[in-house]
Length: 116
Image (spheres, rainbow, N blue to C red):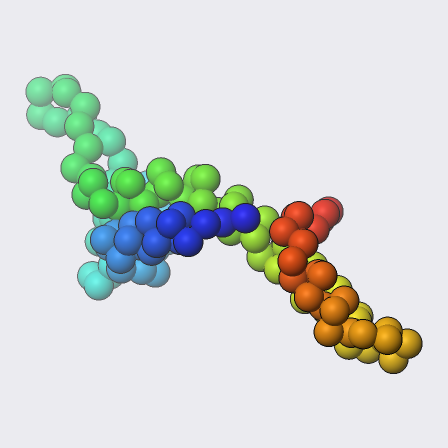
């Protein structure tokens, strides 16, 4: 399960990064308030043949964190959707003598719902 600390850290990274939407133009990651503004431009050689990149550190941290955050967020959404489906099934089941206890048991179960 995603902790509140992880959510807070990810939120801070989002807040610090260049505002979106971002897109890929085939060469650079572009976005922000200015059209065609490079958020993370390609690495290119300078006049002396030295390779360099002029990346905003907050944007780079955001992209690097997204690699781990996205799978965790996807898993969390799947877990919550599975939990929601279980609760909806309980609410449709007129034969459940104590639907509130059943729903509470579902909510108390922190195991991830399997997904395909």
